[in-house]
Figure 1 (tube, rainbow, N blue to C red):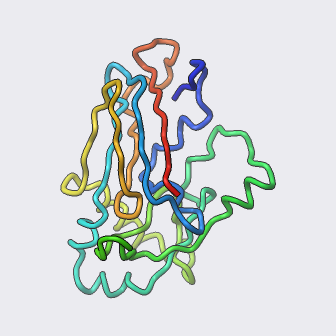
Figure 2 (tube, rainbow, N blue to C red; figure 1 turned 90 degrees about the vertical axis):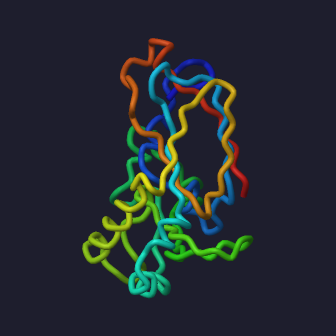
Length: 197
């Protein structure tokens, strides 16, 4: 929620929904690494969801329904909060993040395992479906993502480094601390992220 100089970050809202980093790009991010420089005294956690497990626990009928589907991923989906409070993107940036169609069921290129590859931050419809038609099924799947059986909650400490595979996991940063009072050092959250193409 802050920059290195202590000012409020314009990306402070970017992780407050479940997502896989850069799923809106034609070739999404492979993995991400996050390093904690400063964590709030209370809260400031990051939650992770195992999308292998979510997919594997679906019924065979639902797996068969989802297998051929594709979804449109965009920072500008009707669900997205990521651009809230940020300055408008320039034309070149807009072209780079205009969105991409991805398989709903992703076969991991290294493990061969299947995972559910949609996220509430970037997906509001399946390809060939309207937003309204897509909504009930997407809501059902998004609710599964946050089920405790599939999640891990990391309580950050200064110096922690986490590394995850965006192709089979999702993450989000719940607003579980005093986000409004950033003048107080105990509410500041400073992280550095590196992303593998």
